[in-house]
Amino acid sequence: MVKKVRKAVFPAAGLGTRFLPATKASPKEMLPIVDKPMIQYAVEEAEACNIKEFIMITGKSKRAIEDHFDYAWELEETLKSKGKKTMLKEIQRLAEHQFAYIRQGAPLGLGHAILCSKPFVKDEPFAVILSDDIIDPDDNLLGEMIKIYNKYKATVLALQRVPKEEIHRYGVIAGKEVKKNVYKISDMVEKPTSSAAPSDLAIIGRYILTPDIFNFIEKTSPGKGGEIQLTDALKALLKRKPVYGYLFEGRRYDGGDKIGYLKATVELAMKNPALRDEFKEYLFSRILSLSNKEQ
Ligand code: UTP
Image 1 (cartoon, rainbow, N blue to C red):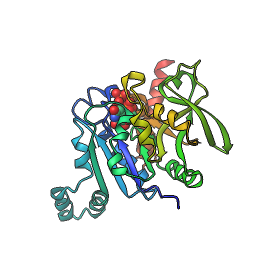
Image 2: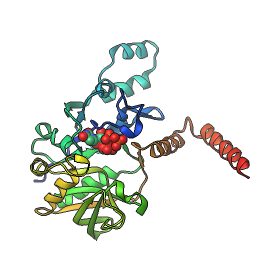
Image 3: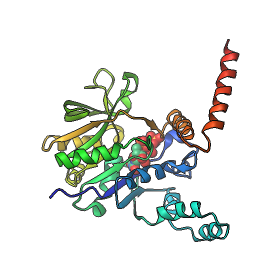
Image 4: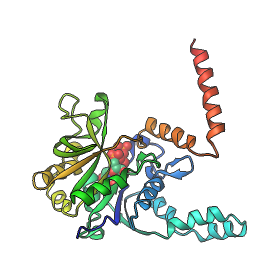
């Protein structure tokens, strides 16, 4: 019987250099989008897919992540005494999950970060969620990927079409569409130049991996940027086992990049019924005054 995906790994040990100085002493994953840190959106995405165990890969200056998902009794008592039941429930709900924290001694790359989760993942399939890749909460990307995993019992990567000018920032695949939006992957290249890219299908920050990936990461030498790259381990896996890609056509924002982060903030604020009208009015008036100035 195929094992269910019950565990998710959240690599959060990167340095977040694109967001300095904000990330000098605070984790990038704790940057808020409207009223929640990026990593909470990621955890809620996994929660919605019935994930039961949350494995965080953290590092230096990342303690705030542990505190965020822990009980906070002083705050809870205050909320209780003030009758703020909804907020209290919301805060307690997250702490009820089972979290594990593993420190990645040095940011040696995404592949290495995932390898750190091996003692907790054991022999089960698992999801990997990069919390700085923000997926619109109304899109069920992870749920679709789990369905594909259940059908093919193989590794599934999330893909998105990316314009030529941006392709050098991603791992890029070659493959054949076997079903609408499902690709059987035949090759992948980490951060290619636009002329060397085998397609416009980029790997984005959601993966369903099988535990055999650990053997391949262990054999992977440092690649681009001196880091142990997940793409290199996946490429080796590909020679032995099928790997599928799911083409996601919904909205994604690169929250690790300033422009992506600003876009995510605007989009998620517009989805918030308590903010939408006032914020929309502000945006309209701001755009109007900017375009008047330009004329
Ligand atoms: P990124 O390259 O986007 O994040 O890694 P970064 O290194 O933190 O940011 P920049 O590029 O310096 O601005 C993708 C994800 O992998 C994690 C990061 O925390 C991020 O969630 N990561 C990366 C690790 O956990 N460990 C690593 O060694 C590298």
